[in-house]
Structures are given as structure tokens and as C-alpha cells.
Image 1: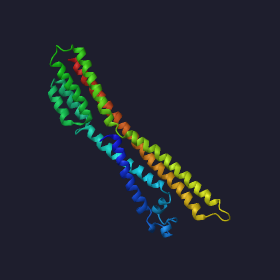
Image 2: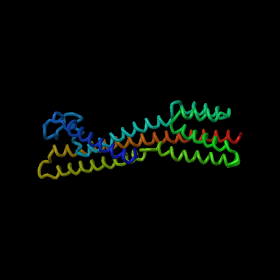
Image 3: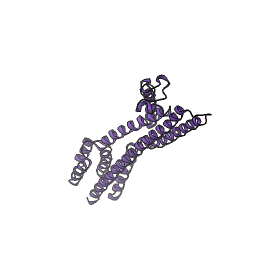
Image 4: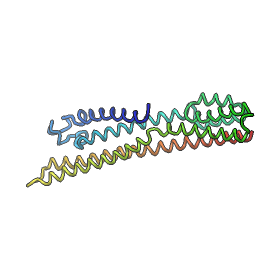
Length: 257
């Protein structure tokens, strides 16, 4: 599934779920002192509901955050392969040093994942070039293998970084939505203070509550998104570093031979 289609479908599903949670969960009349008016909350759920319709949007963004985090965790685990990466690299390098390219390719097939795919491309290309030495001299063969590694990395890296931009964007949007809710709540509060005579205490409290709930919700979603984004960026960088290190060692073995 294309990344844009995944995000759109996720947004629609999350929006439907969040509206249901907002209306029937948080907005349950049992959570309020005044029943159907739903302005004086009895508990935390009622308090969150007073944040207004933007709370539903913040819930949508938080659901998207959690969904992308789960998707990235599963994808990066799959990209690592079946065995631990250091153990896999050690076995491959030992096999290549022994001159058993076919066995090393078999190890990549068993390992699977993005890491194994890049190493397999290098081994397969080297095997193809060395099977017919009349095609290129040794130096050009090594350059061709290096080029194939770079091409494989260019194909695998976008898969490792998939949806990370969406995660970062959600964090930015959540901050703005929270700020918008804060402004709307403060407008409502000042409107209550502007009444002639005694201020409308319920409207004043509701406006302040709306502002604070949206501020807290926006910060929660933004913090979650930023922490997850940085975590996964670090994981991807670690993947690419390990692949580069393994590719370099394999190239050194090829040069030595």
C-alpha cells in the first residue's frame, strides 16, 4: 500500500473512532452534573469533554501516532531479519572469507529483511561479475559491486523511513490544534467576563477548562510524536550504519582476493 493511501485510510478510521469516543464515551450524560447540558463535569472524562470538538481531532491524532508507532516497530523488526544483525554479519563475513559466496547468499535468504537484501545484492553482483572475468577487470568489478550496494541502499532506505515524516507532521499539527483550542477557550472565558453584572461562572469555568484541556492534549500528542520520531530515526541510522560497515568489510575481503 502506498504511504499516502495508508495515511488517508488511517486518518478516516481514527476520525470515526475518535468521534465515537468523544460523543458516546466522554460525552456520556452520566459524566456531568447537569445531565444533557454537559457543562459541569463530574469526573475526568467529563472534564476532557469540555475541551470542545477539537478534543476529537486530538484523539484522532493520538490514535494515528500509536498506529504509526506500532507499524514502524513491526516493520523495523522485519527489516532486521530473523537473527540478530551482528550475529548475521559475523556468519556472512566468515563465509565470504572462506570463499563460499553461494553459502553467504543462502544465509541472506534465510535472514531476510532489508539488511540481508543489501548484502545479498552485493554478493550476487560479485558472483555474476567474477563468473566471466573477460567482461571487466578487477577494479571495475569492485566499482560495479559498490554501485549495486548504493542502489540497493537507495531502494531500502525509503522503506525504513516510511511514515516518519507523517509522525513528525502529526506532532507539529497537534501543537497547533492545541494552541487553537487554547485560544478558543480563552475567547469563551473573556466573553463570560464581558457580561453585565456578575460574570457567568459556568461559562467562565468551561472556557478555562476548554483552553487547558486542549493545551494538555496538544502537548501530549506532540511529545509522543516527537519522541517516537527521534527514536525511529535513530533506529534507521543504526541500520544504515551497520549495513555500511558490513558492506565495507565485504568489499575489503573482495579487494584482498
